[in-house]
Image (cartoon, rainbow, N blue to C red):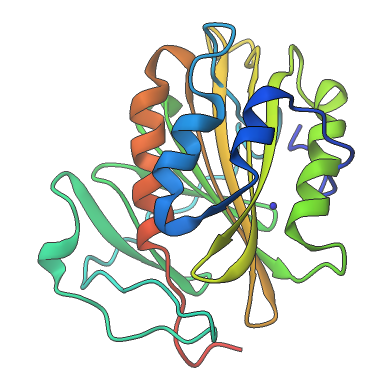
Amino acid sequence: TLATPAPRGRGPRRRTALVAAVAVVTLAGLGAGIAALAFDRDGDDTASDGGSRDKPTATATASKTPGEKPSKPSPSGKSSAPPSKSAVPAGYELVDDPFGFSIAVPEGYSRVVKGPRVYYNSPGMEFRIGIHVQEQDPKGPLRLSREADARGPQDYPGYRSGQVIETQRDGLPAALWAFIWNGSADDGGSRQTYDLTWDEAGRMYDVWVSAPVGKKSEGKQHFDRAVDSFSRPADQN
């Protein structure tokens, strides 16, 4: 491939029953893959980056430019013409981010930048959407996600229910990572994270959502919306 967990390095995976059952999921059916992935384990589902990812501190002015919702990038790495603005779900707005991508986030979320990542957070930081754009790593999304999962117990207090699934996003190699952790002292409880990483047009994209375990269904909805709406300029290299 939502202290930030160590950069995307991920190691041996062990997730038993669920991962074996789901092996390869196409992102067109990402919602179903996530549902099978980590929905009710330990009664907890909350992952946020134990540090910078989940608890960004450097705040930037929200730069939201509602516009037409772009379509998903094609396997060639080129984005097709965006659909009409009405395609953006009610309660969400399309953001044209200065980092070079567009994404649908819930209305009223604030934009925060910390390090190389961009965050869109709900008031009170209950829900957090993170996006990381970087150069591709030779290891690829799957290996990096597995390495991050292997480091989970060191990076996230109370790390559990970690799972990594090999998948695709519009035909492009991708990995889906989900886990629960105890959350920070300010979180008031465990958190669930859903994290999708894929390679496209010479870059690696990482989109994740962190939510309170008790509201993981809402967190999954935000994750689905973010992934489905994410696009980059067709001419971006």
